[in-house]
Amino acid sequence: MKNQKIIFWVTTVIIFLMEGVMPAFTSQTEMAKEGIKHLGYPEYFGNALVVFKVVGALLLIIPQVPKRIKEWAYAGFAFDFIFASISHFAVDGFNFQSFFPLIILAILLVSYYSYHQLNSASTHSK
Image 1 (spheres, rainbow, N blue to C red):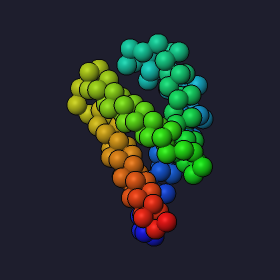
Image 2: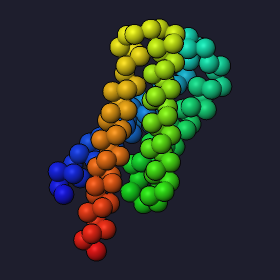
Image 3: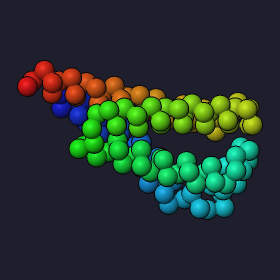
Image 4: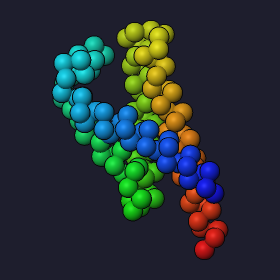
């Protein structure tokens, strides 16, 4: 149980930092704006994406958030990473930038699995 908590918190904090904190501080830089434009998306899409990422990251990291809401946040991030990877593959071909969202998706899946393991353990111990 202790290992599962460590795995959950480490993976969830990584998602929180990479998908909540970093976008909040870097989304208005020229590099970020150019990245969205490079993929063929309008600037407003990048702004909306950042809002959803920050909200989703907060939903994952705050323990009091109801389970059903966390499920939606996990699903939203999964779609985000899958479609980010598809966008990069379509525009840039096969390179690290195209695979990176899938690496983050793997971290998200570990967080999701450990989240359910912890909830299953706490349900059985009651």
